[in-house]
Length: 290
Image 1 (cartoon, rainbow, N blue to C red):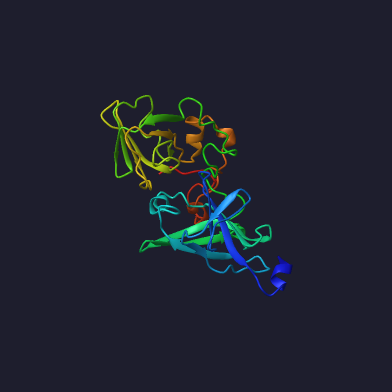
Image 2 (cartoon, rainbow, N blue to C red):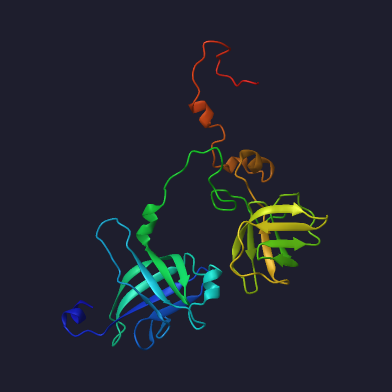
């Protein structure tokens, strides 16, 4: 690539591959014909391109933007609304289109905020150094810092009682789901749990349960905090996982997992920090009952 750039006359194009979290890989190029390498075909004429990449030698975050038109052949509005590009991996190359073996990887990161307007989109591309903006280490908090089912938590959500696969029966606003016969679980058992769509047009989408109510037993109504980007249809399969409010009591009684609790339930609260000594009363350090 250095020799090619030093030659004075260049045949350069930009190519970038987008790998969605559902495994779909899409290739784009600003060249006027398709290019192929690494098993990916980078399509021309998709209307997608990128601004110049700004990079520094320090630890500052190297971000750029991609923009283009919404089309049925490339990036669709429905897929953007469904969140299929949220957090998708992006790789960008500078390529000699006359010899694609001559190329250099210029960018690697993820898609951040996406803005749609007038049949077009503008996507923020966040480099790997974006991770430097994230808090590191443990937080000293009364509630658990683990995510239910992850390696730190250790709960197996596939064991009986912690997850249920159902067929969608009635759905409203892509957010409220009603089931005529859904017994065997306590009221509010799934609150704060994950709601996963397994097949259909909304396959792969995940929501968080806001309300879980036994509705006209043995029926049940489950409401999500936010509508899914694509509405599941009756007959689509979904997986509903038990919820956890991250309290020590819940970890012990609901999941029998107190040994893996990642919080600090005995840490003093803010009222303790604001307390002050008194000359009267029993000052033995014990709790008081009003």
